[in-house]
Length: 141
Image (tube, rainbow, N blue to C red; front, side, top):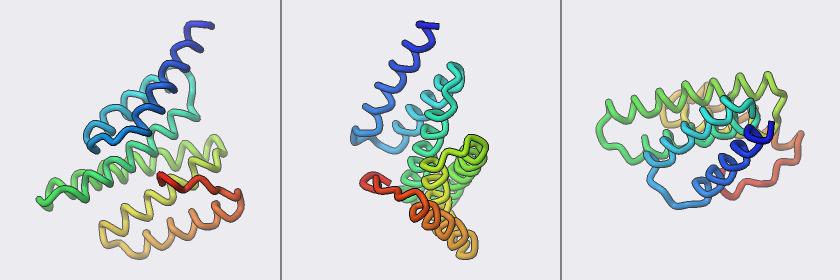
């Protein structure tokens, strides 16, 4: 059991370093996808959902830097896919912090996709969760 706990702690430490570093979105995507996999392998579903949210955010950031419509669309598609997966997993776990972030990032994704109806829906959900939970850690969101 100690080996699994040690691996989780190591992954959490690396996750925190990536979260706080100024890295290119592509680097963050690679790192957070790796952390997600490691957390899932070790049974840490809560941190895996946070890694999914951060990968979603990094794909969204990458899409904003891309000039070619096809590349931008591809990045937004990946962000949407991972964001919806994070939302589903956060709902299963009843993890309000991750639910808030997943809804917020999905609203931003759909805003970039020019889907105002979905953007408004997810923004409304994130605001509702923010009020209900008193979420106040919005510095890096």
